[in-house]
Image (cartoon, rainbow over all chains, first blue to last red; front, side):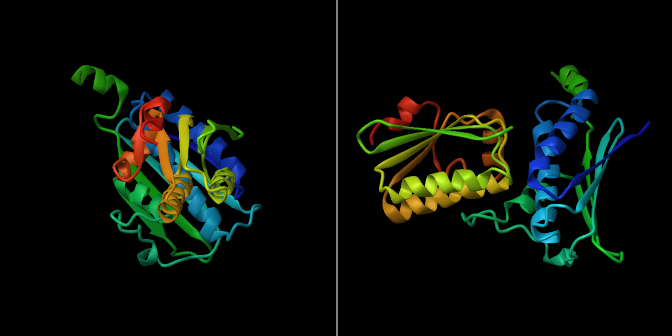
Length: 146
Length: 113
């Protein structure tokens, strides 16, 4: 069975901690191992930060709509914004060997999530879908392996 | 969670900054401003204690990378200590653990300065 939770926050950085707490508790309640949870929380945070910075240009009163879906073996996050669209081919992480500030958020998302898709096939904004396969990532599964 | 920055000076031009709270998009500017002020004062070394930082995102990492670059340009030592598991994991993903001088304790970080 897939369980879904929806959350809408304003595009104000002060609400990022709220989104992080909700994702954390959802994943804890789903028995996802504590090793992987901070990484998944980071991906949601980075995606929202990018929307605030690039999609809404720092405007703080625009909606960021999130849907978190959890099944036994996967975690899917859909994040919808209504800001400036950009070509998904332009969303590139910086080369990791370059030690310089910036460009790491997209790198984290691509490195941690199994599937990442930016859909701009709509009048306004973007729908970002990120998926993580949870096979072997549930705390109970880890205990069995251990 | 609000951010707190506690600075202590040991008298030899070495400053230790204890950061308490999440470093994310809403708070990294405050960290950046604080570190920039310290660099402008031409300290011999800046030690950043991250033991009370449960969460860091890419903007926080970018701030510390800026600090590192500033330290190289100004010949100031810039060291990180006591990374929490989450922060250490993010540094590992970003492959930055070997780029920074990272120590398990403030005492170790102060050696050789």
